[in-house]
Image 1 (cartoon, rainbow, N blue to C red):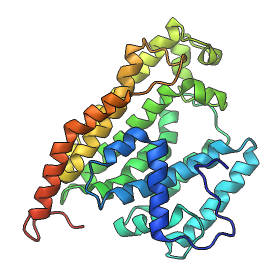
Image 2: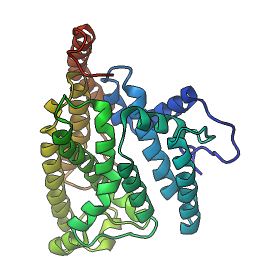
Image 3: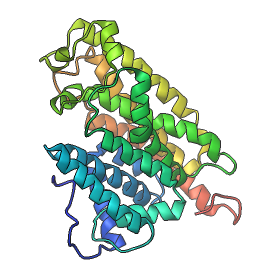
Length: 315
């Protein structure tokens, strides 16, 4: 396994402190923009967001870290086998599951979302192409939308708005993942996967072989511009839910949208040629976005701490 996926077999039980810290490190190392946005949350919320990220990264590493499908399937089975007892409160030697299970219990996170996520991870073992965008959305329902809805209780919808906030949370997950798919076309192809719908490739006259060329041709650039606008639609629908969250969570979500949306801006600025190298938002730009939202984050956190008892969200 890779360094992002520590061994668990035969290990002694892991403390919650160690588990939450490992999840934080995974987030900081592999989700730099997202991790930066989490620093805008009140301190008590951050470990729970890290725990959810850590679990998702942990499972994703299983899918990507083996060359033999049977090995990956067996590893996912072992993870699922350790997960059920952990969710029931049993101690585990798995480094990530104690924090994840504690967060799931604390916030009453729907186990159906967890099952949907793991089902999509398992699909990655055998499904390498998606015929239409609706087919791709079926995959992203588990791999992305479910992550958004798992995060939602930690971000605290305002009283009475939890159900309404669920759809924007789904859309946020879809927006982030589609952005990743556009950025990682070449990397995904190297793993044998194509996350651009085949119907869209046909529509724009793009072949799968075109995705592995040193530079993007005109047809591929047009296709990526089309998919980028689709991603922007998901971002627009996701932003509708920001004001449904408790104020102390809003700067984090706004910054995350801006940072991930910034990847789309960089792709556009490069003429949609994602094959020449991985598109990133420069560190200076990330820090500017962070600083712009920091004042609002601190003010919202102070206001909630000083609110009279019974007037703010429960913690």
